[in-house]
Image (cartoon, rainbow, N blue to C red):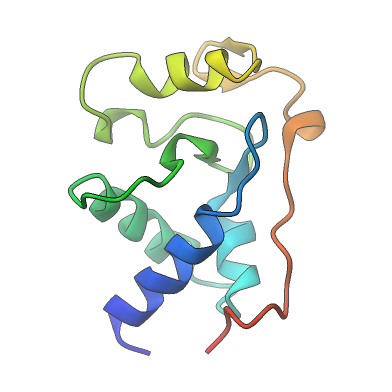
Length: 113
């Protein structure tokens, strides 16, 4: 699968993340049939900041609920601010009660290659 196809599949999943919920790079990778490619999902998320698309990229965090992508947002604290506006509590760059806010992307929904 070419990177652009992979990235498009990632963006399809990210577009589905409900407001007030978050998911992880690994969960997205699993949903698109590439379970061992969470790092590549991270690359796709880094790239999407430069795209003119309305994706809720702030809702993608690491498997422990840490805001690892925060440096890719324009301005300091933007990722945290967006999540807090959706009702999440963040402490030391980590989502409090992460499991309560976690959204598991659907698997076998046509995302996989």
